[in-house]
Amino acid sequence: MQYRGLTQSEYPRLLDLLEEVNIAPREYFRNLYDLDPYEDPELSRVAVDGGRFVGHVRVFPRPHGGGAAQLWSGAIANVGTLADYRGRGVCRQLLEDSVALMRKRGMHYSTVLSGVPVYGKCGWEELPRTGHLVSVHDVRLPMPHDWSVRIFVRERDLVQVAAIYEEFNRERPLAVQRSMDYWFANLNTAIETSSLFLVVEQNGEVAAYMRGHQKGDAVTCLEAAHRCGAEQAYAALAWVFSRYYRKCLWRTVRLRLPGDHPLIASLSAVFRVDQVTVPHLWMRLVDLAGLLESFAPLWSRRIATARVPGSSCCRLQCADQEAVLRLGATSSVEASTRSQTVSSGLPTIALSQRELFELIFGVSSDAVRRVLTGPRERRLWEAALRGPAAVYWGADDV
Ligand SMILES: CC(C)(COP(=O)(O)OP(=O)(O)OC[C@H]1O[C@@H](n2cnc3c(N)ncnc32)[C@H](O)[C@@H]1OP(=O)(O)O)[C@@H](O)C(=O)NCCC(=O)NCCS
Image 1 (cartoon, protein in one colour):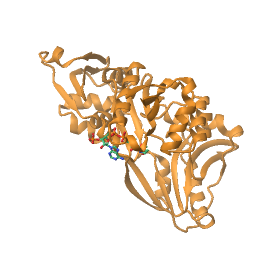
Image 2 (spheres, protein in one colour):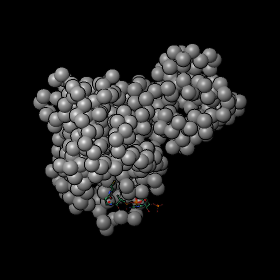
Image 3 (cartoon, protein in one colour):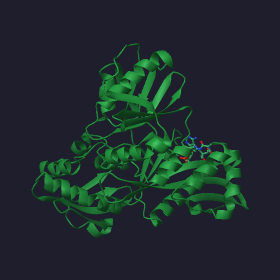
Image 4 (tube, helix red, strand yellow):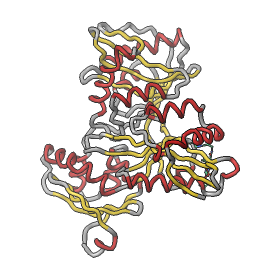
């Protein structure tokens, strides 16, 4: 069996394989690869047996923000092995081959959104996220003064929506940094049962938007953002929800939003909202030192702004990697190997991948407390991580 990258002329054969594995229609994949701003056939890793394509994994490079210097994620998708080759380690080999490519291309970590637990067996760890379940009921709300809600019109609204997205997500870990090319591709390829894209306007200007999809009486909100100071716009969306209860039979709304999102507060004021855990986001570390280096300038800035004195130095170990981190108003990172630092006398913090991501993405507020015990260390980390909550927008799924 050979594991390698695809070549441009082999795309038709790849589409044949994907059709046979039956993940989605052929046209979906053709569109997905043609439009992707980071398109490169090498990103498709194929297993070839005697000239026959028998398995595939695609890596989608995605720039993430989080206020750090450029971070790159390798998003894994379009994974499949032919039925008569399953259970023989083909997918495992393809995933390893994909991680090797990510390393070569300077990516920092990998994400997969999937309900299939194969990734847990192959080195990824699940990162649970908080979601909310809204029980919509019949209530007659007044439409908030000054606001209006309408369907998104691409030609008219995209520039404003993209600017709102960028402002809202700039400092949020895990959020994709979207270029205009990315927006066009994303709007053309997102698979949605029934697409729902609403904008909220004030004085003819878009102030907030919500993207989701509807299936039966359930609506899933995949993404929502607002201009700075326009939190009131969400009261207009609550009005829409109450109206659509009668008109379109919306009964349940799933919110895949970060815990600090004001739409949750707006809806909680009217409807019952229960907190739930959203599973299926898997992550794997690719380059520990590179990841910490990207965050170091941001952490230095935040520590300096919070005027936390001193610094703290430790060896961070995660998966099979290690780095020495000096955290302070001038933070620095040095890649190291276990044998180099074993006699250095520095305190060692060994983290699982999940703990590492929870810690640096601020996904779980107790991660700092659980992992770091010294009071000085904790003050430095708390200052470094003082930012908005991480978010993995469902609309970015491939
Ligand atoms: C999921 C799929 C890609 C796995 O391919 P495969 O080549 O059979 O996988 P491997 O043999 O490399 O298995 C690797 C590990 O994952 C486990 N695994 C494989 N499929 C699994 C599944 N569906 N659920 C749980 N574990 C699974 C294997 O047991 C193995 O672990 P082990 O070594 O500890 O026993 C294949 O079943 C498939 O193509 N399914 C249909 C399409 C699909 O679901 N794609 C994934 C969408 S995200």
